[in-house]
Image 1: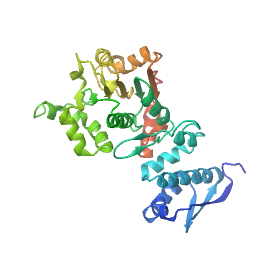
Image 2 (image 1 turned 120 degrees about the vertical axis):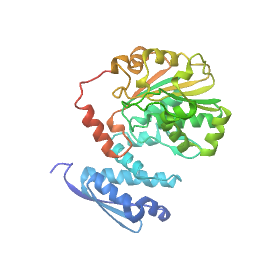
Image 3 (image 1 turned 180 degrees about the vertical axis):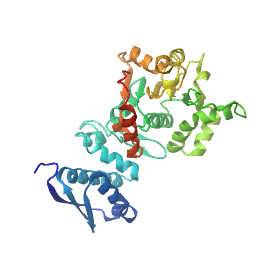
Length: 329
């Protein structure tokens, strides 16, 4: 019988009984989630958890339970999405390193006013390191991998510490295939629907009243890419979302806005181009091909394995991308 299917039983003990309720979840929902994801049987009695199933699955379950417990012991909450991420990362040989960093370096994390964010996939760890180190970062990959969310979190963290003076969030105002016609209202009301995902990420990292106050004062600016022309963006953390929908000319214009003491993050999925002309006209792949090997520029490529939404999203990405011809970007 192979290691993969040999059935074993293991026990895990936890010292702090006050953490058991959030660890197990309401009506043991967290344990049920682990059972369904990993194909094991879990029973809890007191501070002892018993796991039974295939040997590899039992080992992964035990590791995930310990990571969940350690996260709670640090004062953080866990939810079903984070549990799914722990399960996904448990297949990686570097799970411990992903969460704690190298022996001589601090853990990989981003601290914001509302939460502390740690990597939730193998691909997020190097991306978070690039966000803290490189001048310009390209984040490429499918939806749900945390490209924009982590960039916004890093931007909020740097704004809070004063290492940048402004936070500028931008994206092309491009409709995804449908025609919305003329929108009512002033300019802000017209473009806000396109920028809603950026607002959502901001509100998750900073109290809403602070977001509104900083927008009013100009510390946070959210605007379409067309508003960037002619500006020099100094002392700022600048994020361009949905960058696959920029033209080559728009991308060149945006990148050349880079100013002193700034950081720029360009996020996009080269497989979801909505502009006329499709991939051939997208400025994202063109920019990466031209700039990837320049000093000070980092590139992170996410895959479906890095999707941190519902697990079915990763399977949807695989189903769609598996039928396409290989694309280089």
